[in-house]
Image 1: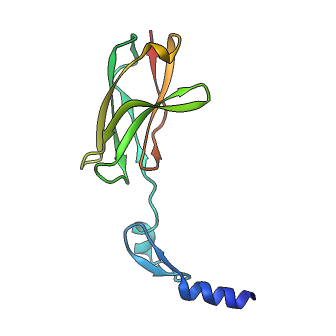
Image 2: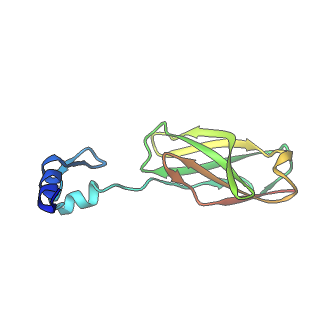
Image 3: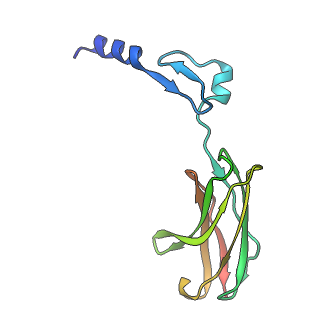
Length: 135
């Protein structure tokens, strides 16, 4: 298939669906308004623990905010165990204002005492890592 034919076929068939529901023909330049509002925005999450350290079997809260996530999107707490991030039994739904809150009870089986790394994930977003020490 020659280059000109492939280009014509792609132009005739292609329509890009942008994140805000607007459409634009392939190859058509985006306007300034489209560039600011229609180009895919990355979802983000923040996360913060209510305490810096806990004892085994002690609960703590995790709160944060999201941008670019729809309300009711599920976010989950994860803990780094070795080289892997493992989902924990602590989840929340994003509220209308983008906030979320959940709690987690530190388990004995997270290993020896010391700093434990956590993050929150959901809707394709990942929060920065935060630590809570197990004492």
